[in-house]
Image (cartoon, rainbow, N blue to C red):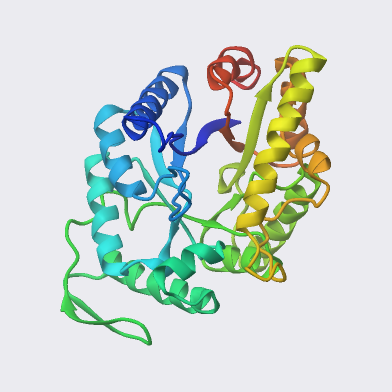
Length: 330
């Protein structure tokens, strides 16, 4: 089993120097994560929350590429409907070059209605914009010399993307998906799969099985590193700490669920957790003592999960995991 880190910077926008301190703390945590043996670090992209979330993930990863030497660096995800695909292709290729071929390109369609509204893009266009953007990006990385593209949203004539990517034919492609049709699309189109941190283990394993069946149908072979399961991590030593962790998670679940509904509270994303927030927390977290977490991970491993991305809001959580849980899987 391999373990990566997942999430982003935690800042305090209302405090003097809050952004600077938050970004510095995050950068230090990634550098420490490399020393502790984490395989990867994936960063989310969000906009317009007012909560200080990372908006320019590729910029931050370029800086991290210079501060590290071994850990893989990735996006989870770049929401393609909001971006010019040629500019993304150039930026990713540059990052892949600067990192020495350590970049993983995670992409998605997006799910937060307020972000689409902020960019003035109808969320109903997300799928078509995503698919055309990926067509352009793949063409940019695999064409010999100049290329053209004439689509519904984008028109490019006789252009060339520089530099070339270091990894060939391009960096690994990851797709965040949850609905059956999206899981099947990921398998059919050659993506590895992100499974989100908000669902219970039961839901995650059901989605994993849909993806595995779709891989077989597409003529692909499943590998344990083809799926990355994101999980929140709370290491607790007693019942009081456990209950406090559950309460913290329930509050964050409520906030994340609110982002995943439209303004009329009718349309929801596959990111929405179980409506019973306690169930979502208890049955979706890596929660408990290091020994209990080892057993939870062994259950996932037995079902074919070989790659887990961890998000821990507790100070020192990832260090404790590396020291007391990781050795059981090396």
